[in-house]
Image 1 (cartoon, one colour):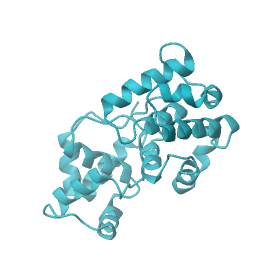
Image 2 (cartoon, one colour):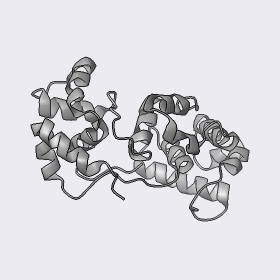
Image 3 (cartoon, helix red, strand yellow):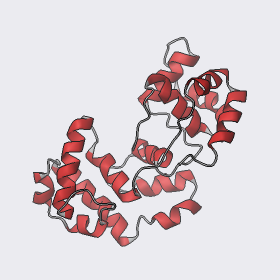
Length: 211
């Protein structure tokens, strides 16, 4: 489902920025879309860190069978994942560190330390702070989660390599722009920096990424 702010965002960005106006016209009819529940989305992000998409999917499929005993369910139970023994998680292909990270994430959900019902009331930075309290979740992963799962409209991931590449390509004659310059550029995109970022990503890879 299209985010409620999407059409207004594309209109405002198109008026404010000729580059984005061109990109928005170049990629009609596509938009951000949420996939999965919060726990599953974050667990998949941890599993997929620093490995190929294919390898991540293989490990994820084994992980789901190990903790659920069947094919992938609609939702994984954090309490069950948190009780899963480390040797069982290691046999799925997870490193010891990632196995510990996934259990830490599960326990944050099971104990209510991470409670999705509270998130709508939290500003972006407050939610990022809660997410990075989980072992294995850094700021970039938290920002991706806010953009792709929470559909927050004004997240600007200045450490993302794709954002750096797209800004260099479209705004700085192919030269990498420093973070201060990127932040200054992005002021014109507020309060829809997530949407601007999404179109910058599309300029590098037309197929939308799902998290």
